[in-house]
Length: 450
Image 1 (cartoon, rainbow, N blue to C red):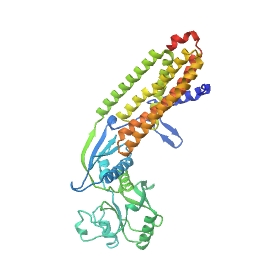
Image 2: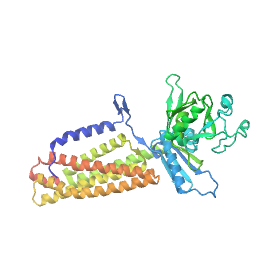
Image 3: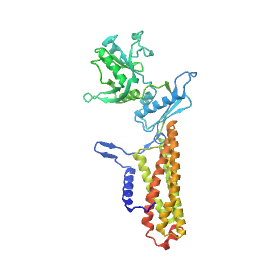
Image 4: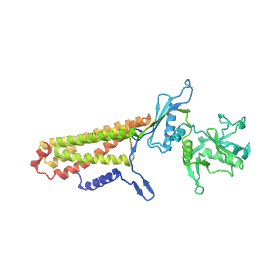
């Protein structure tokens, strides 16, 4: 490794200035033309409070539920709560028949629970046999279709089974749209190629007939087919609020659950626990960093002080990345950050010990700095690479088995390791050349602890 280029000072200063700007509590966020992005700390359920919901398969105890079914249900539930705008939800299978959902910062708990447990079975149903007037009377009423009999049918519709043209499986996308004139919300959708052909054929043959859009056996809309719809696109209209339209779009986007789920426990986590945990975590982090910095300064003297400066820069840059990405801060994630502080110092210790050996062997100070970094680099590289591989395994494990807290720990530790490489190899080395190259040789034993 060659001596550092002094031109590195400029990008280092720019990076640190940007990190300080991001970390500032009064940060206004990024505003570039039409692009807007808030930069803020994202806290998990254990730090900011929220909602914890425990779901269980709503099937008789003797009915077998496979692991594949529960994992599929978990993935769909996670997709649904992501669609609600919840940041970093925890969704994991607990036991063989339960799914645990943790929603940090959720405000509308009723909407969230309803979205999670609805089956989301969408059907396009042919009501041409009863005409427009009778079809309008079925709005918000349960009906029976040949796709499967519904429950609690309207007595007036008893005995009538309507044909299902196609189901939600033919949907490709679903999103909230708003009429620019009336301001009313609707759910727009696009169909798969096969669904578009089926829809085009049916609408061409039934112009003037009612077509019911049925969700979970209940008619939510019964529009009259005005013309053949051949573009593979349509919309579901009704008296929707924004929340209702968004909830419907989420249900349609992420399909039906493979097993029905019932809520067996709802628990609200208050912010008091979160604030207390955050305060204790912050105190632990400050104490840990202070102890490490004191050790470096007392044992390695001037190089230790320079390493402390690099360590403070490390903390600022790492925290700035947490806000910029953003990384959801939970207690395990904070634990990963605190652990990474020790990893950040480890590289400096290896470098300083190699420098001492070179100085004892009669090298000049400049030579000792360069050779110390050069000979310590293989050990630093291998140890950090091993940690990053471990983080990747932990992240994969957490992602595969729904252990989001493990993912948070692995992510913050990996970011800390990568930033520590920058501060130890680039920043510390540049500072040491900037300061120590100007010292007289007689000052080396006293200032370097040799």
